[in-house]
Length: 111
Length: 115
Image (cartoon, rainbow over the protein chains, first blue to last red):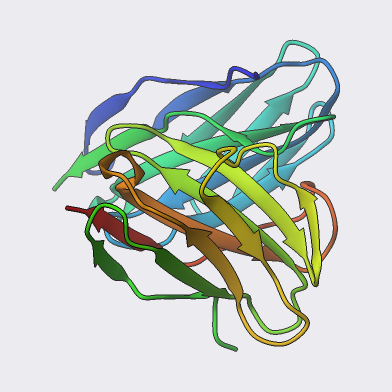
């Protein structure tokens, strides 16, 4: 059973603040790391799929980095807005296993 | 282009009844994944199917649960003789390519309540 951990579990920031959170995953037999954004009462929305060590992906004010050797990924949000409030999930794909999700980081942005 | 569709969105069953959850993948997608979210827990993989084939069912409970993805029609997750512990949100996701390096697109989920 793989262990995918996310921290912090929850985070409160003010509108305009930049923030980041962490996903740690097993580095052995690693294939891909997925990030999702999940708003209450909606479907998880795919943000990024990352496979290469050192990879960096960006979508608007959100970006992510990947370190496959040490098994962590950071998600950054620049200039947080209230509409960024959601739970951010990461999921790791390692050989011999299916996608294993972390517990998520719940972000709340106060206006 | 319609996204992943799941129905019903909410399902109430009494203990011992059967629950059937349906998932229609995005157009052109032939890979379907089912996940379960128990109360206060994260998403857990259950089963991965391609058209007419079960590829990986390592996350499925050994008894009472089955899944299919026929040549025509939606994927079905079937739970026989439901118990209270089956109460959860069941999500399906679809992808266009094999393997987990491709983006998976999630449906809105079916919330099953067992009385």
